[in-house]
Amino acid sequence: MRVLITTPPLDRPGGVATYFEVLAPHMTNVASYFFIGSRGDDEGIARRVARVLVDTWAFTHRLLSERPDLVHLNPSLGHLAIVRDGILLLVAKLFACPVVVFVHGWDQSLAQALKHGAPGALFRAVFKRADAFIVLASKVAEELHAMDIRRPIFLETTTVHDDLLATQPRQTKSADDPVRILFLARVERAKGIFEVLDAYHLLQQRCSHVTLTVAGDGSDLPAARDRAAALGLSVEFTGFVRGEAKLREFFAADVYLFASHAEGMPISVLEAMAAGLPVVTTCVGGLADFFDDGAMGFLLDDADPVRMAERLAVLVENPLRRRAIGNDNTEYARQRFAPAHVAKRLCNLYRRVINHETDDRAVLSAR
Image (cartoon, rainbow, N blue to C red; front, side):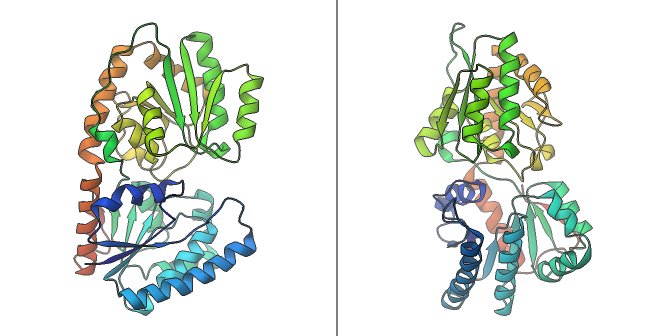
């Protein structure tokens, strides 16, 4: 079985690239990769359109030369990604190749637009030709059904690096050591960076022995630095981290904070759990399908800074609870998010689609 997977370059930041970078060693005999998406952060609209045309030609060449048994597309639900992947889907079906569409992200405003009128009719006409879908949250399956998509939908999860799971449990810290809070994500308004800074400001009024590290890069990094300075906060901004540097940030932290407004399945939350951290997070994407509020940390309805600060304070002031939650989170991640397990589930899913062993109306758990 050979599967051609479309993905951004594996060295690019972002959930899809990270997902396949982690899975790649476990799928060497199955997967080959066709790289799509932006090659830089300053790409204009004309260059993006030209890239889609070039990618379509190159994708067609790969289909002809490799003749894969299945194509795996990975669109986020954004305007250009939907158009691009719709074209690639039609090309693959032109060569009678089965197609699985893995919806990683979910733009609610675009989803609403796709339910009605000409855009919705065009979306359904193209994407109903896919043989199966994979989603990261049950509510996304519901949205696809609301768009009259009648294809098998598999509920999956993201994965975490083996290095996070192989590390020994954390050592107990001294009572005099500050409690380190980590925010690791794109530094953008939609990721909740400004609410995070406001919550940290409130938390310091109650708990003085805390620090905040913001690990990531993004369009709002300068504004975030300005907000921290205006609030009189001492915040460590590390910039983008990956590899060993990323592992060091996770293992140096005591609590992970994630405040995104919308996600598919935030991989950094899974990584934090694998690293033995309790998590305070907004209830986005697939987290609602498994995250146990109180047992894994705290799940927030939205990125309200007051509520966020209150939940952080509970963990900051209870080191034994932090450690117990962290240990449980690591074990949960080992059972559910280990790359070998996720890769095996994906390969089983591919075989089912290739062999037509699916139910067009079913939402099937691959987890």
